[in-house]
Length: 533
Ligand code: FAD
Ligand code: N01
Image 1 (spheres, rainbow, N blue to C red):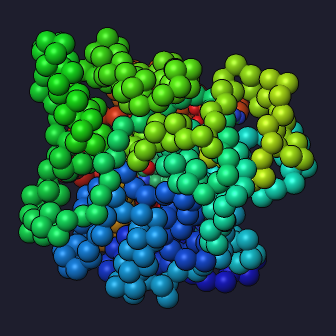
Image 2: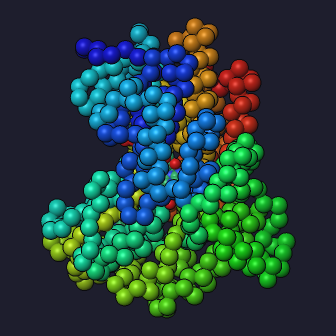
Image 3: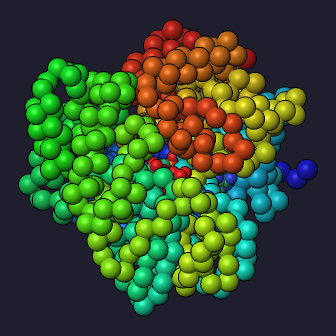
């Protein structure tokens, strides 16, 4: 086997996690490089170029905090950054910290084998290069493997097919076209109103309605931006000490039943008018008590009923099969209002699944719906998809995918026992996807970087997770999840959206502040739960 290159650390992925990992590793003098299958940085914001794509956590929060200079010199233009703005931001960071030379673009990592004798990872690319590296960091993303349902006839379709998670660089022109869209998660909710502006007709195929709250999006006022920048330290600290990593959403103090019905509805109304996820942070028990949750859910359903003029459509849009907030809550700009437009129709496929795609459209319930272009807003093989797509094998030639067959198991979401020197950024059983992700990414990258530095300084060859510690962590993760309403929903958090994927609630929902304290405690106890050799 000819070795193309030898590294201290190979990082897979050039999204926010990969770029910050590279910056940290290079700053600490390691020979590190990224391998990225795309031709540029940005990850999520490189791939998700669909109409209306933007973040739904305010950009003053949803941004790196590690460099004071960066957070002072970058000026977000809008409350919620658009995909082009977020991509530019990623490119700016890449340039500012001189990362580009150390990123191998257009190259996919396909295999990684740990060699016990050499105490190294042997890593293969789709260009048949073999790199050996002491450390392997998977910054492969939780929402980076688009999922397209296997409908029969898909290859027969005459028009263009798009997936929101792999959108082409040249924006398709839907003007005068009949467009079909499958999926009403966050990607559908963001893109449907925008596509409806140009399409002659838009047919929305909905299997499950989703709760969505108004984003109340607007340009970012200069005085608000300045005030935030002046007080960034305070806001970042508030975020770190919160449950979901967002400065303005501090833990609530009262139950939904500590107040009268009128007071409760006033609080919901205020949150609705304010926009964003505020409503979910109104009361302590919204995500733990079904009755409390139902008060918020019914409030939102009543809003939908008031907005959507056609009664049948309104009822179809009202979610009733999961507690509000147990699937990723959507934020929208005029989503429900879009269904009042004459060129938009909602087709319920909950009881009559899509049977097949045809030359001219698709068939459900014995009816053929005709359209020119088809958009899949059908989500991702979340959290494990990108990791499992790499054939990762330990010294005994056992694959990570086979170990994760019945669901992923990690220690702190960072390491997997028996896989030395393999690190995951915001992996399963970490709070990553249940938080402002850049905050979680920074915390994980710092942790992993310190772990690698500790290993190096003490002349160890390897670090791995202790199996008992991993089992305890997984059990704790499940206990926390089971004390909430989250597992009740059919969602990608549980792996439910992928046929054949085993059902496990994957994110840690104990909160980012708790989680960071736990991690800090492990460091204080000499990296408790990690084994160095
Ligand atoms: P990614 O950005 O997914 O990057 C992973 C990279 O790894 C990709 O570029 C991929 O090509 C590459 N890769 C994967 N496998 C391989 C391989 N085998 N070989 C080579 N390269 C590989 N989070 C929030 O907190 N707030 C938001 O408002 C928000 N909005 C979102 C909107 C959308 C449309 C989506 C899809 C997600 C959103 N998220 C949001 C979550 C978002 O994914 C994270 O915030 C963050 O961008 C993830 O960064 P990452 O670097 O971990 O992963
Ligand atoms: O994907 P999803 P997404 N027949 O899995 C439907 C982040 N994100 O890309 O619910 C018919 O949520 C499926 O129906 P059902 C965010 O974390 C953030 O929208 O399974 N329909 C569902 O309606 C988010 O949670 C933003 O019944 C089928 C939809 O496709 C995550 O990414 C924006 C089907 C998939 O929804 C994923 O969001 C975008 C079938 N066979 C994304 N298969 C922000 O705004 C699937 N569906 C921050």
